[in-house]
Length: 469
Image 1 (tube, one colour):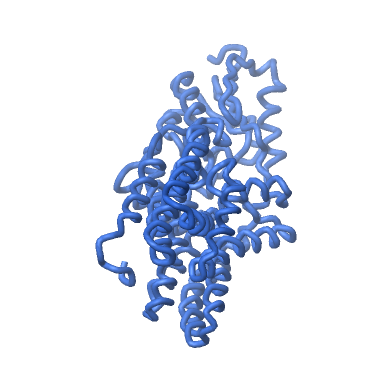
Image 2: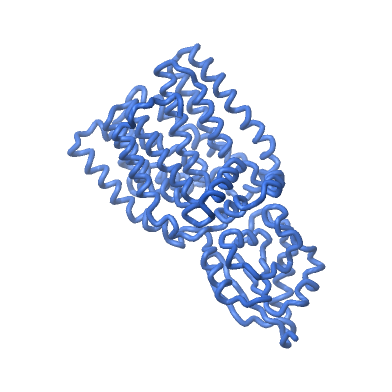
């Protein structure tokens, strides 16, 4: 990107980026897609007409990411590895840009330590193995901060900083909590001319984000499931930002040890202000979820690396090795099905194995229909019997509840999919209850002949009795 040096990347950058690529990429297709990733897969396959109509109703805040994923799917297919590859590249960018930031602000060792701490962080690797945009926001946050530091040091133009900031906000609006942190960094320089230049660049970047916010604000009901953060949520956030489970106490000591003027002025506001502002906001209206502040992880790594740099190699390397060893169980655990809310691959396997031509499928919750977007081949030939407009909206449109019995009248066998957790905002609760009643409470009409469990729910096979003729 223009605005960065065209010299060969420093060894710290290369080592950190390659480490992130290897760590995040191992077992990339091992975890099954889960419901959020199913939305990504479904949106990426849509034609542009239905794509735009969905964003007009819901998920506009993710529109740029979905557009990016449309290109990925068109070029590389919709397999698990292809869907998650941009997230891996986001982790690579986060590690490489953090290493370069550390090198510029603290020296070669600080850069190497910072980049490796980012690459080793289980939280980053966890979201690198998910087809969502959160590691991309971490990478863009690190890149934007790097461009800001370069502009502040060399007094060059901030246009590329503004571009990075705009992309960051368009990928996820909550990532714009980085802006107050950057403002604090600029104010600490006590340079009015610099402040005016930064304000102009930030205002230009925020303009398209403001337009997105106007569209997305009426859709905020989609995060109504978020609960007010408690002490446990804050503790989990601190542990995750520290990078490695059990490493929090060491991180605090190293952060305090490594107080370095310019690095501290850059990374400390970035580490503190976005999570703090989001937590305070969530006391009024709950919005806090850890993945929304994942982009602050590079800041913690920079401050920790500055502390490690104060130690001799003989002390610093063992601490880094200890962090890697402590992180290993978390990296292994995150690749297990238990780490996702549901296992849509297992659901697809059950349906694929047990279904016959002419069978139907009914989803207890309308929003569960998005499971078909994760592994669509498994549902080929199944009649989504209650759907009248499968492509409308995020989850399709179902027939009115008074038509349910009629639509099931000609069905011999139906797979009934029930997720364990009810959607927080469920305007179809009454209709959903009727589906269950028609099948489970009508033994004279239906008999259950099969039941299978998957992570996150169950599948029930109902057959009509007497035998369908």
